[in-house]
Length: 198
Image 1 (tube, rainbow, N blue to C red):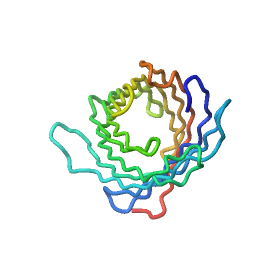
Image 2: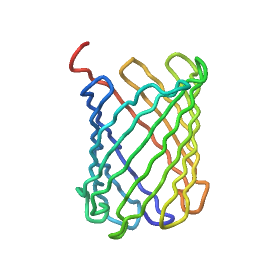
Image 3: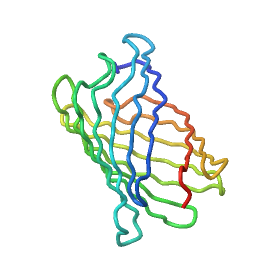
């Protein structure tokens, strides 16, 4: 995406398949990117991975390990044209009945113009349960790349769960550094389908 350019991005679909009580397979369906200006629209790259919930840790932290790889399946102008691995370590901890702290430590190895650009990412989030079905959050995210300046942004959002297996959300963010996106806004819908009853 070029500096000063607006792009529509969707649908950002993640399919998760539970294969054991603490293990799931993950399939990130390619987004469709449509630049509003210069550039050709097309689909991005597909990603596959596995998530493993780790054993309970001291202090009441819930920690998981995600190992994934994106495959060069996207359009010529959008794909990285490389097999790009990434590792994520999401965590969360309940602070009270209504407040939760969470975050993630990640390392990505994206291919940029034929070369790896190792990128570390740190996020920190505070979530507030407003009602039984409705919550809101504020999040900081920082990307630190081997080539290029750091990208800092603030992300806020809210989610509503009309049923135990459905969620609607609205979120927005603003860049805090010159290398970050200027701003973004998104809406989402997610659902859970259970094939087997326990």
